[in-house]
Amino acid sequence: MNKLNISIIGVPSDYGQTRRGVDMGPSAIRYAGVVERLEAIGHSVQDQGDIRVSQKHSDAVVDKKLLNLEEVVEVSTALARSVHEAIQQKKFPLVFGGDHSIAIGTLAGLSEHYNNLGVIWFDAHADLNTPDTTPSGNIHGMPLAVSIGLGHERLVKIHTDAPKIKPENVIIIGARSVDPGERELISQQGIKVYTMHEIDRLGMTRVMEDAFAYLKERNVDGVHLSLDLDGLDPLYTPGVGTPVPGGITYRESHLAMEMLQESGMLTSAEFVEVNPILDEKNTTANVAVALMGSLFGETLV
Image (cartoon, rainbow, N blue to C red):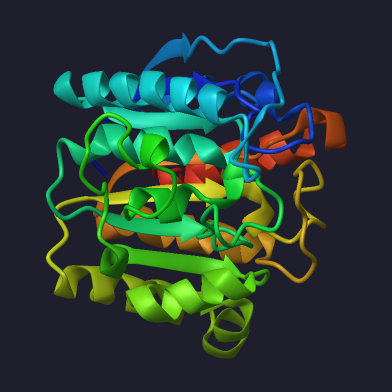
């Protein structure tokens, strides 16, 4: 296994949704011992601290559709800059959220460095809503749509004007709560989705093998993992804002991370939606750190 220079970037933002507490996610993950765990594997880890995020909530709604647009733009712009700088310094960006709207900034920062980036999106949700389809106005349900160029202009044009990723390079794994507008967009854009039905029927090994083959066929020049802890069944991750029963098991998740590490394709990652207020004894943050252990090459023997 290659030893990496990992740059940790915390994003204590809860602007993408309405349940307070997820802004403490980066602190909870650090408290669960992530730096020590990654260093024990043999990686060099530099914790860059947190992006500066104002704690003042305007709860403003733009165009009667988007909650906290100004704040999300500000956070995403700062995050894009930090991710961009980490790659310039030849470091592996590892981002801790915060709600999943932060992926807008992560992917924006990555986009300058990859012409054909692949994205593996572990999530119970598709996160493909637009201002026209969103049932809630919460931007954490929109980051994939924004990143393929669909949505409010101020979000789409963060860091660079062009779309950040190609829809055909996206693979969603673990979906089990998809809104009607998202379902239509998946079909229109040719986005590959492995729902829990496919995982149950095929098994996680087959799903991951197919995912790697799919991305290799598209000659991706990097692979970003965006892992929402609600992708796992809430039995294992109680501290998330939008839990959906019937998700990926703890062991299936570790297997997926182990296979992703073995593939040698991973170039960046983010872990999001850890909410300590909703959690039980930091269980969800501990699961996140354990999954990072598998993702970065931790072995039993």
